[in-house]
Image 1: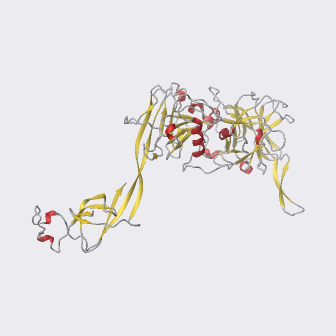
Image 2: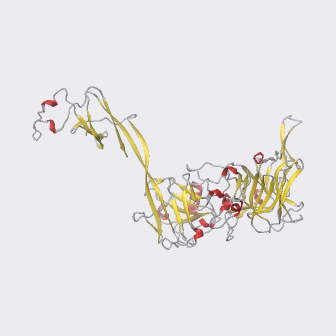
Image 3: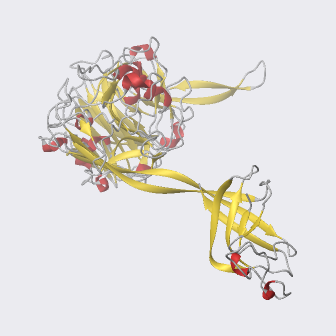
Length: 577
């Protein structure tokens, strides 16, 4: 079948070749909403459809439920849950988050900037992208939880980079990301709890600096339940418990604080009644004054070789240690900075043993401060400190020398390159169930746009049963203990451009019946003006045909186009598929 020219005139276009057309993809978005209604989820037009898609190979077995997924560290099996949480957890953890391999920073398997690691437990909501479009539009997700206890309520949105954030947080109470030189939360270590036979010999620095942190004697470190909520004492996340082991930060020179620089060490600590090593009165928590590398000439090979030198150096930017049972004030913390044997030092009161405390040791202008549980505990002014930078190594829970290691638990370790404003210090300690600022982030999970996964994996208890009702047993009670939400689905349309070339000597006639002298008969005699050299037909419709002459598209011109016989004509046709 040919193109339609004028009202009836036809021409046949050749099959498309390379260069004859271009393709431009674009997306349209449609708003979808869902809500909990007696464990049934509905499209916002009340079109009855199940909004879960199974993503394991035997997808027909796992279709039709929301789930909590869990690792070996977290046991929570629901009798009403048709999905196998361990299988779902393994699939999600190994295919969509950074896989925990021997390489510290393996390649992401998705194209988005996920920051949250899958925790030991996560609530999962899956949207069938085959039904609601090709995927989820960025910055379109909104989830609102309604619970009988208001402290479990949330409104979660996505930030366009694959992260789900809770709008309950006032982010001005967080320390800026670019001020964090090191962040060790140990939450990625749930994978090694009752799961791996051999613990890996490093900890992931989750700051933007990506420091290399190695574990010395990794068999002596344990990963246990982390810091408590400050209102219910419920454990959250994972902590590290040290026993004759310590951490070494490879980039030690990144942690030199000179005489005119402010800085701060924020950490949670739980100390036992006694330190195992009490040969000295101190056990080191953060240290940079004992060991450095030097290069000496080998007299045999005449080459420079690196050697470690162990001694106490007169210049050091910080030294934070616990005074143990042999000291005058057991379980107190001392914070020092030293230059040329002039030492600025401040000590806290004694910490109660076997109890979690938040500690901030910082220099703010000329003041050396220790804050305990959000309150200023001790402050000393000292203005005589000169340069304190050195090339020494940086250790956590030890000083690199045998003995003097810290025994106890540490969690949520942050080092800042500035002093924490007094108004923000309480938020480093605040870890309430409703708003846990101690984690210093509003990120609570991830959205995988192309796959339709919404995963809330934050270790704070508020999010433990994000999609599972009040107690986590699907007790939605209509909308009361459930959640509602909306998102926009995306569908890609491809815009094609086809160039139809009409040469000047082609199609200078028409098949319109009105040009006949008798349009109602079979008479083919034409009106005189048609045979004139001034006759110009007009193009109003073009049909596109494939190589077998099947009509695939019809183009309607907004205005008739005069066919010229003095020049070739190119007509560009655009259509969407």
